[in-house]
Amino acid sequence: MTSSRRFLLTFGLLLVATGALAQVTVPSDSDIRKILVDRIDVQHQGVGIVVGVIEPAGRRVVTYGTFDKGDDRVLNGDTLFEIGSATKVFTSLLLTDAVQRGEVALTDPVSKYLPADVTVPERGGRKITLQDLATHTSGLPRLPSNLAPKDPANPYADYTVRMLYAFLSTYHLSRDIGSQYEYSNLGAGLLGYALARQAGLDYETLVRTRITEALAMKSTVITLSEPLKQRLAPGHDEKRQRVENWDLPVLAGAGAIRSTANDLLAFLAANLGYAKSSLAPAMAAQLAVRHPTGTAGLEIALGWHLFTSPSGGIVWQVWHNGGTGGYRSFIGFDPRTKTGVVVLSNMTTSAGVDDIGLHVLNPAAPLLQPAKARVAVVVDPKLLDAYAGLAPLPARERVLLHLGAIALDAAGWAYDKDRAYYTFLLDIVDRIEAEPKTLPSRLPHASSSTP
Image (cartoon, rainbow, N blue to C red):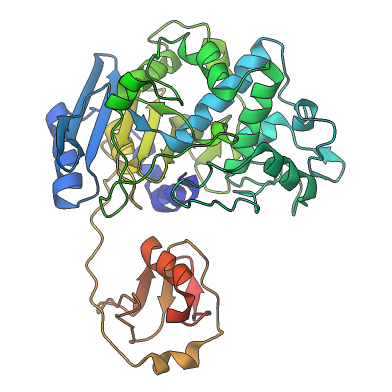
């Protein structure tokens, strides 16, 4: 699943643009289609993309692209995609619905809904609560350290309940519970697991009986029937190669749901008040709890992220994104204009589709521009020896390195002649991790931001 952290780093500078608005004109179908054509045919950042819009004038769906190379079936509002971490919004809605039913309380410790012999980490006499899990403030890490998939292409498939219990029983929190936001797939997955266990159901059945049946979302599932399999757009990696679908049997609440644009528009209709629903109080309750994230103008509610005014008094946009090995997603709405957007893509990319979603919500939010082409020069690797040991390279993050004027082409070093900075993108970092002997183990002057 895609971390919201990368999204926050990318879009932090756009908060002002996406917030202040007087009268917003949502892009027309033709304008949205132009964006999709550019993203797929020019930038090659997609195979097929579906955009759904709900606004006072009604609902509409715009698509471009195909299911797959050699499969020219046209995408539509009923095409299925993995929505990845957007699942977390459903998990937190299960929480607030259970609170409305009197089954749980936000302040209940998660340990209350786990076996007595499972030890959940505590700190300073404080226990991790259901609310802590929903707001990513539990202190639990992004992923459990004992997640070691046999098949990296389907990384959660063989993670078991026993492994989850073993991790919880041995993990020591490094900071106070509730003190800091840290996005955690583990925490959201644990929340979904605990709620399902409390209800005596599996996670998928709980979502169906409490949410999707109430909203007539018949194509929002985890397990695919044969007819739904025919409507599932195959996932693709950044090279447009087909990849496996993901399975999350234990941590389903973190990212297991598959859905369509039409179903997610129905979900947004209920959130925006266009459709009456018994879930309305629970949906409102998701936005009632807010916690700072450490990024100005961004707060975390129960499941949803919120872009807010500088004072925090006005909610500008409510959103969540998602990603798996072959898909990217965005779902969000603006409560002021009563406009909602769904963006689904069957190709994973580092840029994702978040900028499209925000731009449709408010055209003042700029679209991401294509990455600048970089020129590499080949040098003797011995020239790098003087830099060894100065700073480590953080794994799987975009890193800017100031190295003067040298670069190593064969190993993936990228040199920009305009300035002496080197950008290591995810595929290059993956290459370093897969073949550690091709580069020094420690690299110089690492920084997480431009100078």
